Structure formats: C-alpha cells, structure tokens
Image (tube, rainbow over all chains, first blue to last red; front, top):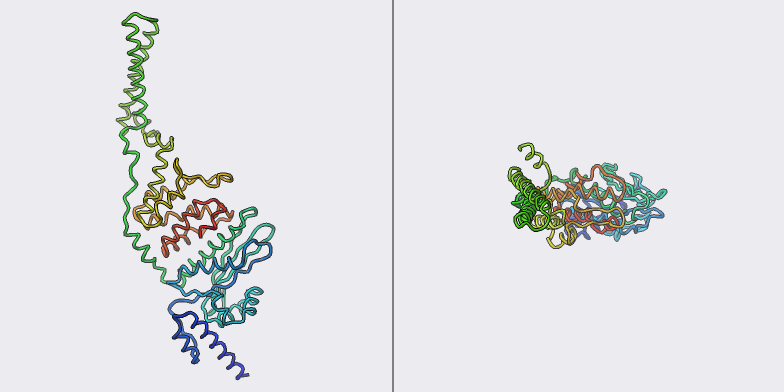
Length: 273
Length: 145
C-alpha cells in the first residue's frame, strides 16, 4: 500500500514537472520537482482555466466558450499565472480529465484536478438552457482550501441573439477577474492607468459662449430688419401718394413697431449674455 | 426688464443650440468626443469617428429594432467634462453596462465596479471594448471582445 502511494506520488510529481517544463519559464522549478520536492508558494497565484460545459440546445461552441474565459484571464498575465486546459491535457489522461470536468463539479474531484496539475485555482463554467432562457455560470474553485470561492451567473432573455451568450460569459469572466484582482493581487492600478491620471485635459470647450450672437439676438435682428423694411415701404407709399394710403399707413406703423420690438429683443439678448 | 431678462435667460436659445437643431453642431460635438479620446491615446480618432459619428452628428444603431441613439450616451458628456485621461477612461463603464443589460435582459448591479477595476488594470483595451459595446447593435456586441 505504501509502495503504491509512493508510486502515485512520484507519478504525480513527474506529471507536474512535465507541465511546468512546458510552461517554459518554470523549467528550473520543474527540474527540482522531478527530483522529488513539492512546489512551494509561488509569487503569483496559478489559475487553470478549464472547460465550459455547454448543455443541449445552446447554440454556442464549447471551445469558443472556453476561449472566452481563457482570453479574459490572459489579460491579467502580468499579475496572475494562467494556464489553459489545453496546456495540461498533453500530459494527462484527456478522457479522464474531460469526464471529471463534464460530469461533476464535486469539490473532491476539483481538488484532485488541482493537485494533479499543481494549480491554486480552477476556473470553470456551465451554460444551460431551460424554456428558452439561457443561464451562464462561472466559478473559481480554490484547490488549497477545497472550496468554491467565487461564483456568478446571469441569464439571457428568450429571443435575444444567441451569440450574446458569449457576451454574458465575458461579463461573468470579468467578475471573476475583478475578484481575483482584489483577492490575490495588490490591486494597484496599472502603470498605464496612472500615466493617464497625469494627462490633464482642457475642460469642455465653451462652444455655446463662443457664439457672440444668441438666438434671441438673431431673432431680434431679423424682426428689426423686417420692421425697418416694412416701415420704409409704408413711408414711401405715404410720401409719394401712390397706391393705397391706408395700406401705407399700416405698413409704416407695423414696420416701426416691429423695429422697436426687434431692437428690444437685441437689447434683452445683450442683458442675458 | 430684469424679469424679462431672467425669463429669456432660462430658455435654451443660444446660437449653438439653434444650429444643433439643424444638425451642424452635433457633428462637431461628436468629433470633439473623438478628439479627446485620441488625445488620451485610448482610441484612434478615425476609428472613433467611424464608429460614433455620421454626417449629421451621432449615429443611431439598431435602427430596425429598438433605436439606440448614440447622442444620448452619458459617456459623451462625461468625456467632455473629464479633467484627466483616467477620468475619461472610466466614463465608458455605465453606458457599456447599460447596453449589455439592455441586450441580454439581465441587469448586473456589480458591472460598473467590475468595469472600473478592469479599466484600471488595462485601460486602453478595456476602454475600447466598452465603447464598442455601447456603440453596437445588440447582435454585434459579442464581436467587441
């Protein structure tokens, strides 16, 4: 029994070593593992992005769904170490891994996966459809503590474009990322964001004030012009004695009145500036 | 006379407002939004104009379904009022979250906080993605990632 346990332990260490060697930068560490030492706490937490289980009737490719999660987590590669299932599958029994992820979410099985591939956290998801409504779930499992430490879900309304499932997966992955940033990194904004803080902007250009003439002034000017024109025409009719004298009187009076009102509007515009 | 002046002062009758009714000024406002984003190196001016503006001003997307008028985005005003580029970058979150909520039919109360956290970590990529979401027809939102 003890020999069997020792063999299992060696096999596990060998597998871990192969995985870490594949990861490249951790090659030296992998060498140590093959010699029989267990991995110590690394600076950056290691997240394994596994499969997204897609239920029947959901018009989403499971590989596309998995890539959404993996790409999202890849954005934080400077702060956390991210591995995809494709990376570790080469050194593990693919069928067994797929079966474990697809058939169960039990904490025991997830912890076992974490142990096999030497990761701190496992990210996984599930998409299911019931009565036209699609539900998307994502979770992070902590392999050290053996618990699901964060989980989020959202629904896509019936009749919505089916490809929006991927958008929901994006937003849920963002929730997990924000959780990971808060829980496992210093959460300090990136240098690029800090540089943006130092880039000051000119306040909103006062386009409204830039115009010397407000609408009131424009209307007042037009009314004044029309009034002067009408008054002049009326005056001409009265002075020359040609045409309808009453009409000339009305035109002259109305023109003078309009000119006065228009001038008043221009003055009011000046007061309101 | 002073009462008249006060009454007139409360009316939105500026010359620019009149022009905007004709569509001229709205296009200028749209270009100003893009100029600020470009000044902050968050999105190229040409790409922004192509996505946000049309000949008359701001685009309207989803014209066949529920019209989504980009002139109504709070982010435009927020970006104009931003005092620094970090503040401008964060302007994208509320409208992007609202757009996803609208398209999926499932509101997420944590979205804005999450969005701000991620913009702090990768400003340009996250800003462009969020701007894309709010400027897209629902069917095109998944292509923003």
